[in-house]
Image (tube, rainbow, N blue to C red; front, side, top):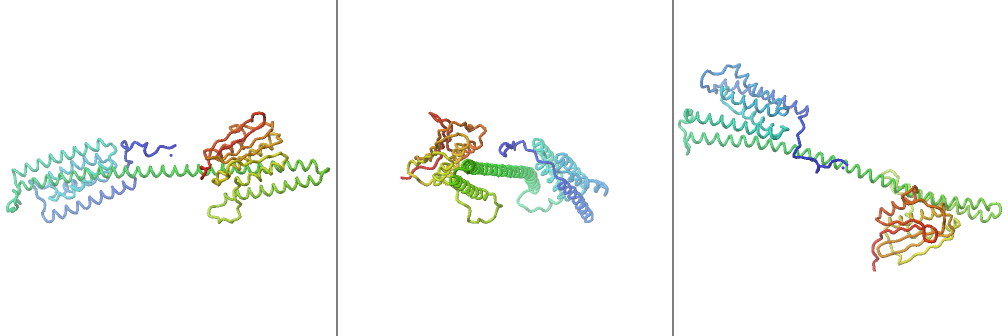
Length: 430
């Protein structure tokens, strides 16, 4: 995939990508909306006299400016989360000190969102951690100051309290528990958003690696299929054309002296041509477009049963042939049978074309775990090595390797050349 896999990615060092333009636009729109909502609440509070001031009440201009200043940084909360948290934290305390209004809902929401943004978007995770901890410490310090002030200056609403706890103690506990839950939630859900974004990135990368792997597998299958077709084309064309060439040459030499022998050679050429056309049609049938229905007339792939016929064609080329079957014949996988047939076919083609041999011996052996085919001749002509320039011998090696078999090619003792292939075919069933 070789590309890097998902397992090779250092996800501990992952950094969340900056917000998209669409996300930035949403942040700006939400900041404008929060400004409008905060100013609307401010008008309502002032209209019903909900403002409680320790001294001179802030002017309308100061209230509007502080309220707007608290909301506007939210437009940048995903781009510059730490800076926004710092600004919102300072303005949050300023609004409370100036008692802009007695309702703390909107400022609390803004501070929560700012802390959440740091946990979810700050790329420097160390900075994200300690900036939030600093704000929490400062806010609890501010809370402690307010609680101490409450102890020495109890608010008038404590008068007439009827609960089981001391009203001052209840107020302190309420503020402590509320703020612990509030800041813990902001910290926790910010981290959850970061982890969720990282997991989404992991899934996206894994999906991309899977897509690339499937592409490579598809390409590999296509290449393998093309090689298989190329091998089959070479085997079919080379063998039959070689036989036709030998027979046509023989017919030409005796055409004037022995018309009957020339006619027999030409009939062999005709039959060989028809056989080649039939095999080529069957081979090229695999190139039909997907979804095209089977015609039902595609010939079966040649196998071990057709070896005697194949040897007979070689004999018609003027070779003295011998074919022997050893062991108990048994069914073998179709692919193995086809590969064995093609190996023999290519070996006979090389014998006709290259060896100047007079005799060829073909043997088929059924052994315990393998089926073996062997072609030996008494020729003296040279043959290319398996890893050399002969495509036919390379094709043999590839065919045998596909099944995990073994191919041996080379000169025989006493002269001649031998091709021997062993192909796994399963154990003999007693």
